Image 1 (tube, rainbow, N blue to C red):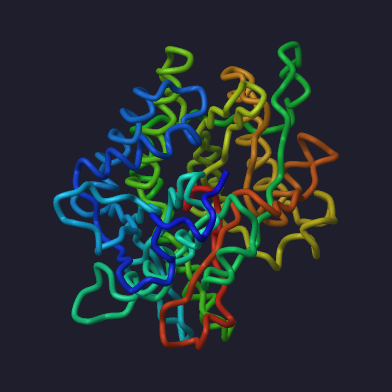
Image 2: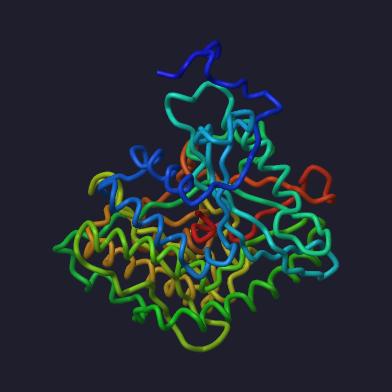
Length: 405
């Protein structure tokens, strides 16, 4: 039960003595112990603490890549341990912005994660106060030469209202869910699909470099065609390594195995390749296990070549060369389904599918449909920049699972 607002030992959330600070090593450990019971899932408390330590020591998160924040009352005696009223983390992210006139710029952005307030402290306004303070801090956090941060994001698990009131506006939050394959399903059902190559950790660096190059070119094209500001996170190797470190730790702890296959690819000719990278998510129980597609790349895909609506159309709506790409996408998703079966993942999820992705999904599962999330993993973006005013007319390009933290 939340403590009432009249409790004499709790400060008001509007008190000027509250401050957002960086925790000491002991306080950082304390935040993990505090949120452990809510987030550890099937892990023991000790394993959960070890996982958080591992994730804080990845190439993405070292050397200031990850920042810890806590809300405390500075009026308390310095000799006494500070009470942690709320806590969160931020991740420094490489991002691209296309502002028009074929101009694409790499910037430093931040993603917010692990926003937490102890159950006994909820209802006091501490989380909201922390986020207000954090928003102001992130305006210039880790920027050089007095530059202002352009945008920050978070992924809400409490719906769309709370964070939107604090400046982080919800963005498209849809996905498709493909079932894992039945153990007795015969591969002959998919003989019309091209053969996909399995991807391992050593394959990812080159794909990331190629993907970044193509993303920059696509954003240049979009900036010449639209007045809207386009933003995206760069799906670099460090990002994938962080996701896979999380996956590998959980797999080793829960099933005593470490997954080696990280994705699948069809084709070798530049401009015609299709590939995806995934991660396995172990839920609170086996029924909640999901294989998430972190990123799906269909080289040569354009909206103009796809069906008129992501909800309609079939493979007959695209020309012969585009059909090859759609079938290649179906092939890598089929491999993902097989991998889900191997690892007792119940479904394969892919965020914010494109028209071609929908066609590929329906090659495998004719009843595949768009699922709109209203509560969990809601991508939310706050515009900190000067223009466009208030973040209006901003589009989040490649809003896929790899950006999650």
